Length: 100
Image (cartoon, rainbow, N blue to C red; front, top):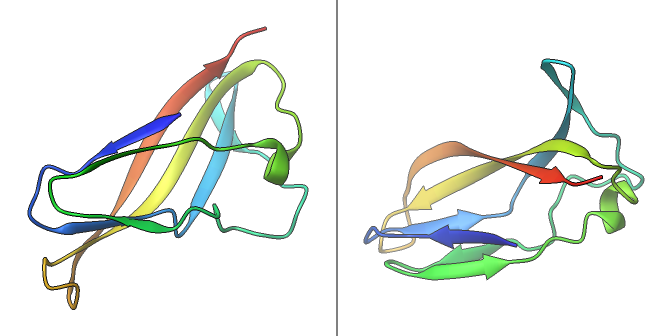
């Protein structure tokens, strides 16, 4: 489960693109997808001063992930409160471990 917190007066759009990496030695290597899609399937808006928690089923896109260390790389957009202007694009990384 991932928790997004928006403490600004702007609108955060999340989920429009992501990549998953597995730690191999000291390097992060891209995890191969089992489907030809780069959409996370949860594109949504997080309104100003809001919080949302999402669960991601990795098996739909990657199959069963083996134990290891992973990095989720999300590409986000921050919109002005009027929803018209994209103020900023940024990347968000989250590391997680699947115990073995």
